[in-house]
Amino acid sequence: MLKKTLIIAAAAGLFATTVAAQTNLFKPEDGVKYRQSIYRVMGAQTKVMGAMVKGEIDFDAEALHQRALNLGNVSGLLGETYFPETRGARGSNLLPKAWNDMDGFRAKGQNFGTALQELIEVSGQPGFDSAKARPVVAKVMQSCKSCHDEYRK
Image (tube, rainbow, N blue to C red; front, side, top):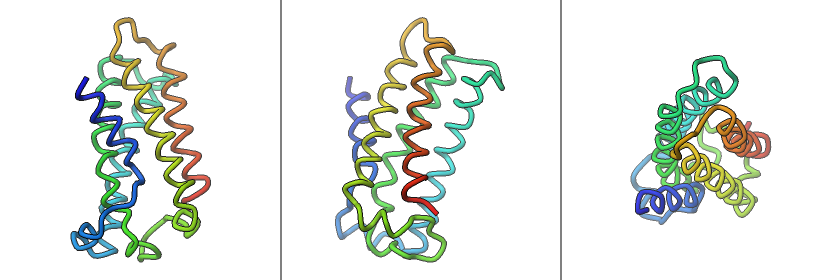
């Protein structure tokens, strides 16, 4: 139960604004690089999950569940990378619209967190198979796509 609560909290805080002290942790360009590294890890997890539900690779329920947990763990690191000084930083793929519509941007993060939590729950249950995986993985992927479509270059 504690693990579930921590994952929900991490995912819900995905795009939360950070405290001023965190701006001292990174130079803006380093914050952007860190953020992009986290997204690369997230992309690697979702790529494998997507390949499993599409039948491109063998479906492995335990491995998919672990990938969902990995995604939940790493997504919690994003919050500290979205500090105001990264706005317009060199190398950033974040559109100015995200900074101008922070409520909408956060809502996308919360949608992702909700979809991911459902995936984590369902994938950890006995009898989880590719038919059950397909719709919940699709929700996670759609939540990623909707944010990319609106807020990413």
